[in-house]
Image 1: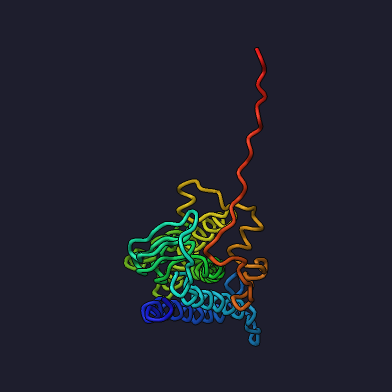
Image 2: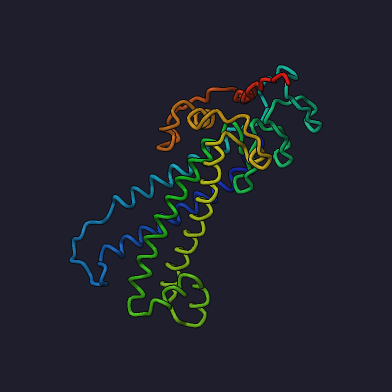
Length: 287
Protein backbone atom coordinates (compact mmCIF):
# COMPACT_ATOMS: atom_id res chain seq x y z
CA UNK A 1 0.00 0.00 0.00
CA UNK A 2 2.86 2.31 0.63
CA UNK A 3 4.02 1.93 -2.92
CA UNK A 4 1.35 2.34 -5.61
CA UNK A 5 -1.21 3.78 -3.19
CA UNK A 6 0.96 6.64 -1.95
CA UNK A 7 -0.22 9.01 -4.70
CA UNK A 8 -3.81 8.66 -3.49
CA UNK A 9 -2.90 8.76 0.19
CA UNK A 10 -0.74 11.86 -0.25
CA UNK A 11 -3.82 13.94 -1.05
CA UNK A 12 -5.34 13.92 2.48
CA UNK A 13 -1.89 14.34 4.04
CA UNK A 14 -1.11 17.38 1.86
CA UNK A 15 -4.58 18.77 2.58
CA UNK A 16 -3.92 18.35 6.29
CA UNK A 17 -0.59 20.14 5.92
CA UNK A 18 -2.27 23.04 4.12
CA UNK A 19 -5.01 23.29 6.75
CA UNK A 20 -2.42 23.05 9.53
CA UNK A 21 -0.35 25.79 7.94
CA UNK A 22 -3.45 27.97 7.58
CA UNK A 23 -4.25 27.40 11.26
CA UNK A 24 -0.71 28.37 12.27
CA UNK A 25 -0.91 31.55 10.19
CA UNK A 26 -4.31 32.42 11.62
CA UNK A 27 -3.14 31.77 15.19
CA UNK A 28 -0.08 33.93 14.50
CA UNK A 29 -2.44 36.81 13.64
CA UNK A 30 -4.52 36.07 16.75
CA UNK A 31 -1.47 36.11 19.00
CA UNK A 32 -0.30 39.34 17.40
CA UNK A 33 -3.68 40.92 18.12
CA UNK A 34 -3.84 39.61 21.68
CA UNK A 35 -0.38 41.05 22.24
CA UNK A 36 -1.81 44.57 21.96
CA UNK A 37 -4.97 44.02 24.01
CA UNK A 38 -5.67 42.80 27.53
CA UNK A 39 -8.75 41.19 28.94
CA UNK A 40 -10.53 44.56 29.21
CA UNK A 41 -9.94 45.43 25.58
CA UNK A 42 -7.26 48.04 26.35
CA UNK A 43 -4.06 48.22 24.38
CA UNK A 44 -0.79 47.15 25.94
CA UNK A 45 2.24 49.32 25.93
CA UNK A 46 4.53 49.08 22.93
CA UNK A 47 7.35 46.62 23.20
CA UNK A 48 5.22 43.84 24.68
CA UNK A 49 7.05 40.56 23.89
CA UNK A 50 5.43 38.28 21.36
CA UNK A 51 4.11 35.02 22.92
CA UNK A 52 6.48 32.71 21.07
CA UNK A 53 5.86 29.92 23.57
CA UNK A 54 2.25 29.61 22.43
CA UNK A 55 3.24 29.54 18.78
CA UNK A 56 5.96 26.95 19.43
CA UNK A 57 3.48 24.79 21.34
CA UNK A 58 1.07 24.87 18.41
CA UNK A 59 3.84 24.05 15.93
CA UNK A 60 4.90 21.12 18.12
CA UNK A 61 1.36 19.71 18.22
CA UNK A 62 0.73 20.16 14.50
CA UNK A 63 4.15 18.77 13.60
CA UNK A 64 3.51 15.65 15.66
CA UNK A 65 0.03 15.27 14.17
CA UNK A 66 1.29 15.50 10.57
CA UNK A 67 4.22 13.13 11.18
CA UNK A 68 1.90 10.61 12.84
CA UNK A 69 -0.44 10.91 9.86
CA UNK A 70 2.45 10.30 7.44
CA UNK A 71 3.62 7.25 9.38
CA UNK A 72 0.04 5.97 9.68
CA UNK A 73 -0.16 5.96 5.88
CA UNK A 74 3.28 4.51 5.16
CA UNK A 75 3.28 1.83 7.89
CA UNK A 76 1.02 -0.51 5.99
CA UNK A 77 -0.65 -3.19 8.15
CA UNK A 78 -1.52 -5.37 5.14
CA UNK A 79 -0.34 -8.93 4.51
CA UNK A 80 1.72 -7.88 1.49
CA UNK A 81 5.29 -8.94 2.02
CA UNK A 82 4.35 -10.97 5.11
CA UNK A 83 5.25 -14.65 5.06
CA UNK A 84 2.14 -16.63 6.02
CA UNK A 85 3.40 -20.11 6.84
CA UNK A 86 0.06 -21.80 6.36
CA UNK A 87 -3.29 -22.47 7.91
CA UNK A 88 -3.24 -22.89 11.64
CA UNK A 89 -5.79 -23.06 14.40
CA UNK A 90 -8.34 -20.28 14.07
CA UNK A 91 -7.22 -19.30 10.56
CA UNK A 92 -9.77 -18.34 7.91
CA UNK A 93 -9.69 -18.45 4.14
CA UNK A 94 -9.95 -15.21 2.16
CA UNK A 95 -11.61 -15.86 -1.18
CA UNK A 96 -10.61 -12.44 -2.50
CA UNK A 97 -6.89 -12.94 -1.82
CA UNK A 98 -7.18 -16.71 -2.27
CA UNK A 99 -5.07 -17.51 0.76
CA UNK A 100 -5.42 -18.51 4.39
CA UNK A 101 -5.25 -15.60 6.83
CA UNK A 102 -4.48 -15.60 10.58
CA UNK A 103 -6.91 -14.69 13.37
CA UNK A 104 -7.99 -11.03 13.63
CA UNK A 105 -7.04 -10.55 9.97
CA UNK A 106 -9.75 -9.35 7.57
CA UNK A 107 -10.03 -8.29 3.95
CA UNK A 108 -10.44 -4.60 3.11
CA UNK A 109 -12.26 -4.06 -0.17
CA UNK A 110 -11.12 -0.41 -0.31
CA UNK A 111 -7.43 -1.41 -0.11
CA UNK A 112 -8.00 -4.72 -1.98
CA UNK A 113 -5.83 -6.60 0.50
CA UNK A 114 -6.08 -8.44 3.80
CA UNK A 115 -5.03 -6.43 6.87
CA UNK A 116 -3.40 -7.83 10.01
CA UNK A 117 -5.45 -7.14 13.14
CA UNK A 118 -7.80 -5.01 11.06
CA UNK A 119 -9.96 -2.48 12.87
CA UNK A 120 -11.50 -0.33 10.13
CA UNK A 121 -10.67 1.60 6.97
CA UNK A 122 -9.93 5.27 7.60
CA UNK A 123 -11.58 7.11 4.71
CA UNK A 124 -10.00 10.48 5.55
CA UNK A 125 -6.45 9.13 5.23
CA UNK A 126 -7.17 6.36 2.72
CA UNK A 127 -5.52 3.67 4.82
CA UNK A 128 -6.62 0.76 6.98
CA UNK A 129 -6.11 0.81 10.72
CA UNK A 130 -4.34 -2.35 11.78
CA UNK A 131 -1.43 -3.95 13.55
CA UNK A 132 1.47 -1.82 12.28
CA UNK A 133 -0.08 1.68 12.43
CA UNK A 134 -2.44 1.68 15.41
CA UNK A 135 0.06 3.64 17.49
CA UNK A 136 0.25 6.47 14.97
CA UNK A 137 -3.52 6.64 14.69
CA UNK A 138 -3.96 7.14 18.43
CA UNK A 139 -1.18 9.75 18.63
CA UNK A 140 -2.59 11.56 15.60
CA UNK A 141 -5.95 11.87 17.34
CA UNK A 142 -4.30 13.04 20.58
CA UNK A 143 -2.09 15.75 19.09
CA UNK A 144 -4.74 16.77 16.58
CA UNK A 145 -7.34 17.24 19.32
CA UNK A 146 -4.89 19.25 21.45
CA UNK A 147 -3.94 21.52 18.51
CA UNK A 148 -7.59 22.12 17.59
CA UNK A 149 -8.52 22.90 21.20
CA UNK A 150 -5.59 25.32 21.39
CA UNK A 151 -6.75 27.15 18.27
CA UNK A 152 -10.36 27.13 19.43
CA UNK A 153 -9.57 28.75 22.79
CA UNK A 154 -7.39 31.45 21.22
CA UNK A 155 -9.99 32.37 18.60
CA UNK A 156 -12.81 32.32 21.14
CA UNK A 157 -10.84 34.80 23.24
CA UNK A 158 -10.56 37.17 20.28
CA UNK A 159 -14.28 36.83 19.60
CA UNK A 160 -15.01 37.76 23.21
CA UNK A 161 -12.78 40.83 22.93
CA UNK A 162 -14.44 41.97 19.70
CA UNK A 163 -17.90 41.42 21.16
CA UNK A 164 -17.45 43.17 24.50
CA UNK A 165 -20.05 45.80 23.69
CA UNK A 166 -22.56 43.16 22.62
CA UNK A 167 -24.83 41.04 24.77
CA UNK A 168 -23.93 37.46 25.80
CA UNK A 169 -26.80 36.18 23.63
CA UNK A 170 -25.29 37.88 20.60
CA UNK A 171 -21.91 36.31 21.30
CA UNK A 172 -23.46 32.86 21.63
CA UNK A 173 -25.37 33.31 18.36
CA UNK A 174 -22.17 34.41 16.67
CA UNK A 175 -20.40 31.23 17.74
CA UNK A 176 -23.37 28.98 16.87
CA UNK A 177 -24.57 30.54 13.58
CA UNK A 178 -21.79 32.85 12.32
CA UNK A 179 -23.06 32.76 8.73
CA UNK A 180 -26.49 34.04 9.76
CA UNK A 181 -24.99 36.84 11.87
CA UNK A 182 -22.88 37.91 8.88
CA UNK A 183 -25.78 37.82 6.42
CA UNK A 184 -28.04 39.98 8.60
CA UNK A 185 -25.22 42.48 9.13
CA UNK A 186 -24.76 41.98 12.88
CA UNK A 187 -20.98 41.37 12.74
CA UNK A 188 -18.06 42.43 10.60
CA UNK A 189 -16.33 40.07 8.21
CA UNK A 190 -13.24 39.96 10.45
CA UNK A 191 -15.29 38.89 13.47
CA UNK A 192 -17.06 36.31 11.33
CA UNK A 193 -13.71 34.78 10.29
CA UNK A 194 -12.61 34.42 13.92
CA UNK A 195 -15.96 32.88 14.90
CA UNK A 196 -15.93 30.52 11.90
CA UNK A 197 -12.42 29.27 12.67
CA UNK A 198 -13.47 28.77 16.30
CA UNK A 199 -16.41 26.61 15.19
CA UNK A 200 -14.27 24.56 12.79
CA UNK A 201 -11.68 23.93 15.51
CA UNK A 202 -14.37 22.97 18.00
CA UNK A 203 -16.04 20.49 15.62
CA UNK A 204 -12.64 18.99 14.77
CA UNK A 205 -11.74 18.77 18.46
CA UNK A 206 -14.97 16.94 19.32
CA UNK A 207 -14.49 14.59 16.36
CA UNK A 208 -10.90 13.71 17.32
CA UNK A 209 -11.71 13.43 21.03
CA UNK A 210 -14.64 11.09 20.39
CA UNK A 211 -12.55 8.76 18.24
CA UNK A 212 -9.64 8.96 20.69
CA UNK A 213 -11.75 7.99 23.68
CA UNK A 214 -13.40 5.12 21.81
CA UNK A 215 -10.16 3.64 20.50
CA UNK A 216 -8.39 4.21 23.80
CA UNK A 217 -11.13 2.11 25.41
CA UNK A 218 -10.66 -0.59 22.76
CA UNK A 219 -6.90 -0.56 23.35
CA UNK A 220 -7.26 -0.95 27.10
CA UNK A 221 -9.70 -3.84 26.57
CA UNK A 222 -7.51 -5.53 23.91
CA UNK A 223 -10.23 -5.38 21.26
CA UNK A 224 -10.84 -4.23 17.71
CA UNK A 225 -14.07 -2.53 16.69
CA UNK A 226 -15.45 -5.82 15.32
CA UNK A 227 -14.53 -7.70 18.50
CA UNK A 228 -16.17 -4.95 20.57
CA UNK A 229 -19.44 -5.36 18.65
CA UNK A 230 -19.25 -9.14 19.01
CA UNK A 231 -18.32 -9.00 22.70
CA UNK A 232 -15.12 -10.97 22.08
CA UNK A 233 -12.58 -10.37 24.89
CA UNK A 234 -10.34 -13.39 24.50
CA UNK A 235 -7.33 -11.16 23.70
CA UNK A 236 -7.69 -9.05 26.85
CA UNK A 237 -4.45 -9.67 28.77
CA UNK A 238 -4.71 -6.73 31.16
CA UNK A 239 -4.37 -3.02 30.44
CA UNK A 240 -0.55 -2.95 30.53
CA UNK A 241 -0.10 -5.90 28.17
CA UNK A 242 -2.84 -4.55 25.91
CA UNK A 243 -1.04 -1.20 25.64
CA UNK A 244 2.24 -2.93 24.85
CA UNK A 245 0.61 -5.00 22.10
CA UNK A 246 -0.61 -1.82 20.37
CA UNK A 247 1.96 0.86 21.30
CA UNK A 248 5.07 -1.24 21.76
CA UNK A 249 7.56 -1.64 24.57
CA UNK A 250 7.82 2.10 25.24
CA UNK A 251 4.07 2.66 25.34
CA UNK A 252 4.47 5.37 27.99
CA UNK A 253 6.76 7.48 25.75
CA UNK A 254 5.20 7.19 22.30
CA UNK A 255 2.70 9.95 23.10
CA UNK A 256 5.54 12.49 23.15
CA UNK A 257 6.83 12.03 19.62
CA UNK A 258 6.42 9.69 16.63
CA UNK A 259 10.22 9.53 16.35
CA UNK A 260 10.52 7.51 19.58
CA UNK A 261 11.25 3.88 18.72
CA UNK A 262 8.87 1.40 20.32
CA UNK A 263 9.06 -2.11 18.79
CA UNK A 264 5.89 -4.15 18.87
CA UNK A 265 6.19 -7.40 20.85
CA UNK A 266 4.44 -9.66 18.33
CA UNK A 267 4.31 -10.30 14.59
CA UNK A 268 0.66 -9.50 13.86
CA UNK A 269 -0.03 -13.15 12.99
CA UNK A 270 -0.20 -14.93 16.33
CA UNK A 271 -1.81 -13.40 19.40
CA UNK A 272 -1.79 -14.59 22.96
CA UNK A 273 -5.20 -15.25 24.46
CA UNK A 274 -6.18 -15.22 28.07
CA UNK A 275 -6.71 -18.47 29.83
CA UNK A 276 -10.33 -19.51 30.21
CA UNK A 277 -11.64 -19.45 33.73
CA UNK A 278 -11.78 -22.92 35.19
CA UNK A 279 -15.15 -23.79 36.64
CA UNK A 280 -15.09 -25.22 40.18
CA UNK A 281 -15.85 -28.92 40.44
CA UNK A 282 -19.14 -29.73 42.12
CA UNK A 283 -18.89 -32.64 44.46
CA UNK A 284 -21.76 -35.09 44.16
CA UNK A 285 -23.35 -36.45 47.28
CA UNK A 286 -24.81 -39.89 47.56
CA UNK A 287 -28.47 -39.87 48.42
